[in-house]
Amino acid sequence: PVDAGKVYALYKKDRGIQSAARFDLSGDVAEGAQAERVVQHDKELAVFGPGFKGGTSYAFLSLAFASASDITSVTLRDVTGDQKSEIVVRGLLRSKGPNKEAVEREVELVFRVTAEGIKRVFGAEVARAIGANRVVGSIKYEPKKVVLAPGKAVGFTEKSYPFNQDSGPVGGLEPLLLPWGSAKAVTYAWSGAGFEKK
Image: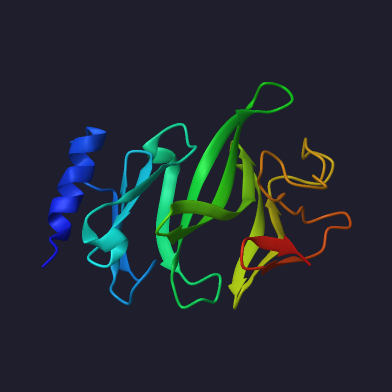
């Protein structure tokens, strides 16, 4: 029988990882009906399991966060409607605002796993904060769909919020929908290769 522990040890050795996994999940994310293991070490996701790549290899992906502590959650859910779970990662991207103030952008990323590897199929900004003030959008998963909607502002008003509504993706991420102005809920439907705006 295949020993998934050996594949995990191989991954850690190959990648020079000493630490314990911050997130360690089990679910059917790829080929076969057996559950795979999905682990997050530092800024990497890795997938392996008895039915994955013949049980002899792993797939990994480096996440574009500044540090591992900026990754706030890793969960599994079927977003594409194919009875396989996708990996949903939430985390913080830090940048500077118009007056050099620290801006925290909260993003949610959806990754699909196949024998070829781990590929991002959706990403959206879901909140933006400067200090204690923040604007929070809503993200909902429906069968084969992702729905983004305007949420609420805490501390910000339309006048005091220093950003405009982005009309399209920013840095490859769907824009945060602001609670004022003309922004309405937007639905993205799974096309078989990615999520397309309806």
